[in-house]
Image (tube, rainbow, N blue to C red; front, side, top):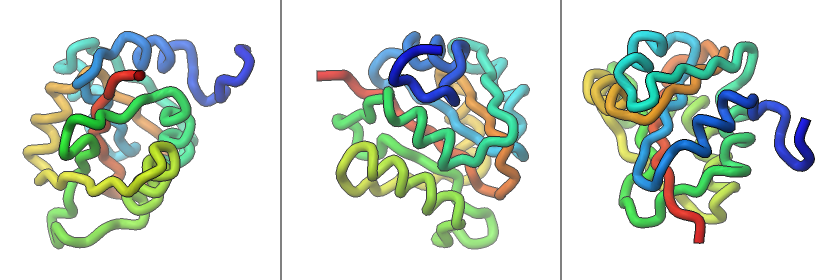
Length: 147
C-alpha cells in the first residue's frame, strides 16, 4: 500500500498511467468490449482489468492522478450508441461527471461511431477494462501535461 493513492490503482495500472506521455490516449472500457483484442494493438500492448468495478469508480480513482489534456478540443471521446448517436447512456453521464469533478470544469466529449472508436482505441496507449456490464461504457481519455 502507498499513502494517499486509491487502492483501486493497482501496480500495473500505476505503471500504465506513469508510462504515458502527453497526447497519449487511455482506453477505458466496459466488460462487453473486446479489450483483449484491442489491447494487443495499443502502444503498450497492456490490458489492465478491474473486475467488479463500476466505470465511474474506476475513472474517479484514475482522475486523482491523471492530467486531462487541455490543448485538445476533445480530450474525452466516447462511443456513441449505434441506435441513437445523440443519446447519453447513464454510464456515460456518470463517467463524465467524475471527469468534470476532477478537472473542475465542463467537458464536452467527442462522439465516435462504434467502428471509429475501435480504430481509435487500437491506436491508444493501453486499455483498462472494468467489470461494469452497462453498455457504451467506452472512453478515450487523452493525457495532458502536469504544470
